[in-house]
Image (cartoon, rainbow, N blue to C red; front, side, top):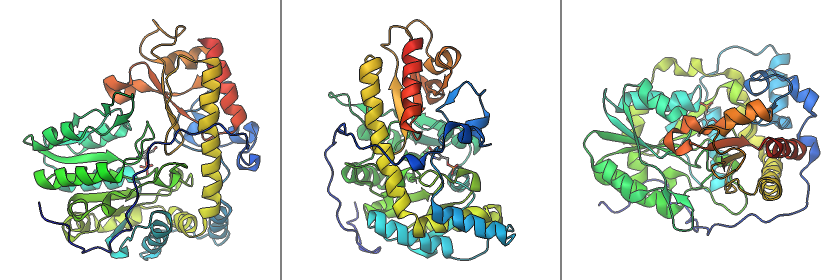
Length: 415
Ligand SMILES: Cc1ncc(COP(=O)(O)O)c(C=O)c1O
């Protein structure tokens, strides 16, 4: 294997963090972060319009928190100017991402290697379109974000499951030896990495990512690293950008970034594809020249504001999520001790294992369907995550602690 070349600014080595079990604590998050339930019910986004008013909605990955003030101000100013045209061909977003990535992860992004796209999904699909031919194989590690499979099929390729490995202590991690076997098999052209991993909230270690990059390089496989949840990495974990780990990663890799999860801007439609080597950049350069105009102008303005002025708000949100992941563990231990739950290292999604819950047993593989009917709590069904998701449901805890408490008590009553 070629030894690493210092072509990209060398990164500070990040230490691999041993897994830290989040400890119960009694500081409540800032309540001003979450509007009261009637105000939330006035929202017209998917989370709040998909179910009747008696249902507590904890599925779609939107947060209940109020917008970061610098983001809200950027949007207000644009609306006051009637500044609602197309996104401008400037480098503002690339420079804002560069500044944020350096502060947050000590990662050097070259603005010339940043391409603005509508959203992460579109960025991944457009990248795959340029990498695969019909029938090619693209590996994924289930249980993983359901649309990964849709995106791979959308470009005529075939998703290949390489499930996360389960260690003797029950921890789930990337299965690097199974990935090597898959990479070595004919027709495997790419691997879609979820970093951090949705729905388990796993933050992959520098060692795992370095080995993954070496394997990808050895077998000529491209790695598409979806890093949308990275800004929401929680205390005790250290997010490592895939492109920062080695020259092999930069040769084989594409990273997808967006403020849509971290600052709750999904409806505004702006994201970026990042490369760090001329070879992958050549594929991104072949995107339609029109792709910028398919990106939301307000999304770009809001994302620049988030990256440049959103650190303080993000820190508050991370504290609130840290509180809620511990609270969820306490509530489950008290009311639903047979539900399996590993507090996530990043993000606001909890992957709940209902397979041993007496009241849910025998009611099929879909606790989310059952709980929607009986508890009037909407979770995301595990069934979309393939065989790995049978008996599981995904819960979004980016809400007020009271909402979480109410949801668990409704679920416990129904079970
Ligand atoms: C891992 C992951 N990737 C992508 C997305 C969707 O991102 P976008 O709306 O930018 O396509 C989500 C949304 O929840 C996600 O969890």
